View: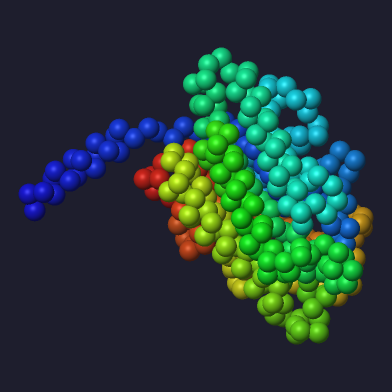
Length: 362
């Protein structure tokens, strides 16, 4: 018992001597159409983008990075294609999604590599413009990087006919999990080498429940369940990328690496829709045909009157109400819910807006 006061004193000294995690001042985003409407590479997903790269109906379909930026007190990170390449423009963040090295490059993993190159070049630009090397390191350490890949890749692989046959990697559907998870993990390592210290990787949603996959799997579902084979493929990828990130953490000192289980969050909503205020878990709010999954969202006239009651916005994308819940659950752990989707820490902790030892907010 005499050792207890000494242990407590030692613990307090360790905590007191640990450097405080300062609030993040920039948000950089890499990903597919889950990160930017300009990144949509799916000809079978007809939810259009405007010529500026913005969502066709932004009031009904804001994406997760923009919602997280708001929680950080930052504006939505601008698309890299809209900037002139000055340090002042990129100092508060950039959205690199959409720079995929060509149509269908996601299956050659070119999307990850192309965006990673742009991100590291941006960090180099900020480093060159910093007054001192210490200032450059501090700026990089106060930036948060979000990686959100996999949805477009699996949407193509799960589609029927020549589109899937032409797009699937030579290693097959199950081989995609290893290829993509390994590439995303390498991207985290390369960002670390470039100075990044705070990174969050988003998992893939349960696409087996998405309207397009449900429509294409009508022969194996009863209209209420999901296409389990598709969900198993997605879960395989999520598990592999989470394991790769867990293996990275001890090898990258000073880095915080978070995995956010988007699959779990959406499945909680689909399993308990009334609890979260939904009554339509299968049909797209904007689409035609069974489940709204035959033709995607083309015009405002196609939008349902109550998007807030739908889980799915179009062929593969959740509605903004769902995305807002995911943003909340990624940010902090609600005191009244067991829905914790990010590990080992929340994004509120990752961004330095709350200490890991502080009580969680609802």
